[in-house]
Length: 114
Length: 114
Length: 114
Length: 114
Image (cartoon, rainbow over all chains, first blue to last red; front, top):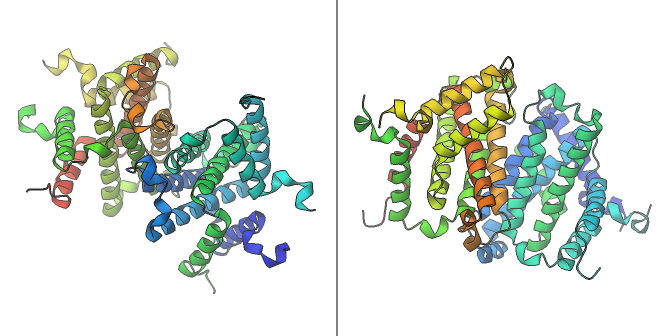
């Protein structure tokens, strides 16, 4: 399937939509890297809030309740949205950054038996 | 360019590498959704820590210093890594979740002039 | 005014009220140190949320708006409540901990002219 | 025991020491309410980090290890320090705020049998 048929599932396309969304509403002055990092942290905490009183076992079953499942997906979307906007503001490529980090971790934490 | 030529830049491929990385080290028992949400929140705060005493203007220039730029990329990678592992643990598709959220926000916050 | 006339303003008395409040509602099984640390972190983020899009100057004037002032006080209360409950659960004395920390910081960051 | 004999254990006295500590190092320009709220949130996450991979049972035993116990006390001190500095910057009385909040919660969550 080409990107044309699934633009919504492409990370770069989503990042562009977020940038255009903010520009159309003139939110750019608020979107300093500092503010976006704060908003990212706040949204990550809202995701954690769903789990704060749950046992480990209960936390593995949150998607069974439709209301909680929607809340989880909504907070995941917010975290990813601010991460992408933060990266756009500073010219960071999140996929390259993660690729490099996994490489470093593979050296730092050798798998048993390797 | 096909995915074959840049597997490291594909979100799903990175998510698989993270899952295999954790499995090879037998870290799965620790990777409950609750613990991954906590770790995501902690990493987002480590990203914020870089900015906490900076002015808005200084925060826009953090990539000019190579040491700070590396720290930013490292924390972005950690946030994305835990977000992808959280989504893998619960079967959430982060790109679909963000696509749906942008759609809801376009209705909730109409652009001026629309 | 003596302490006898204002028991509610004493940190140890507030900590006892919180412990009794949780016990009367049988919330103790949820109040593991881990869960209380997560809740503390979530409440600190809710306080930060009030400030995330404000300029430094605007952030200094939040108490001028009665609604925002109430929200700030409410989140401060939540942060302090979970900090005190966390400390009660682990037998940590927060005032002694802070006293010791200030002492260490005075050695670590000598004041100019000292 | 009068306050004179235990100045270090009094919340207001600790708050004054923190204010004087920051003033002597000319840190006040950095201590906007927004920055202090961010720093408070970062420190609360550092406390959570200690617990992120622990089971509920392990989290109840962290004070048995002297190194972890010291780390817990250190992060508790940092959280309280930034909370007190935040409150000083905005003129919020944290004890009154908590007293009022407990009162509201007693009405909102009646104890069983009341």
